Image 1 (cartoon, helix red, strand yellow):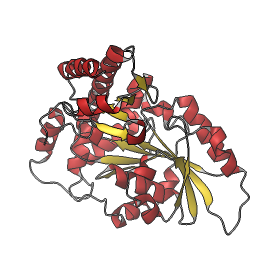
Image 2 (cartoon, rainbow, N blue to C red):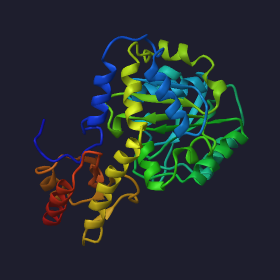
Image 3 (tube, rainbow, N blue to C red):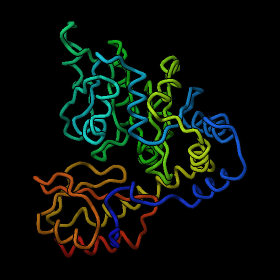
Length: 342
């Protein structure tokens, strides 16, 4: 571990103390396995309340499992999944969606990581043939891998366009909380109310040790999901340890507090440097990620002092991310170093 301030990923932050306390409390005594426990019941209710629905909720170990199994429940192997070419399922999941769903990913170039209705036109107008992959699911991320965020209206437009031709809409919500805080609205406004059919609800990037949830806004898609989850090796026997973490986040608004802190630290960083001469950003700043374009010399100088990723090496684009654990002092120290490097 490098003993340097870390702006690489919100995955790098530790777990929130309240989450660790919840794990310790859940560890006392014994209870039934595989989700037949009070923690899972309570956490399920909290997630349903958060998304404004009364739908099946299934806990899994991680984000890749949540995305892959959610998509598997929505598709058959001859289907295609439309997604941005920058999507996590296309870039950062080692081919797992294609291997375990059997589906082809139909990736679309986008200027900012977001799909639009117009980008679906070519797929919608394609004549069906036994020789071609049949599009069936549109998959989006909220927030996107470019740090951008869909408005509820944008999600609704995609859902309507998909549903009009018999497709489904999937949302990778690894950073659902950051998007909700940025939009200053409840997640239900851009999930259930906006027509999303299946959503992965992230926990790891918002202060949990591990665990995500798959929520079926369209309940019939979950008819055989317990078997899909088991076969997909994502059924936790001691599920209370995932559920207890979600309960800690969703009780008294800790999920929102953590996301608000992460976004506020990114905002502090952005406002301190955005007007500096010679500094540009690849994509608009909206959540808890910034993508500055730096000279190679500035990039190397800063990476000697801070931990962060070079996102697009050929364009010298970096990624700076903040988390619930980022401090004002860390941001202010980073700002000073950035100005020196520039």
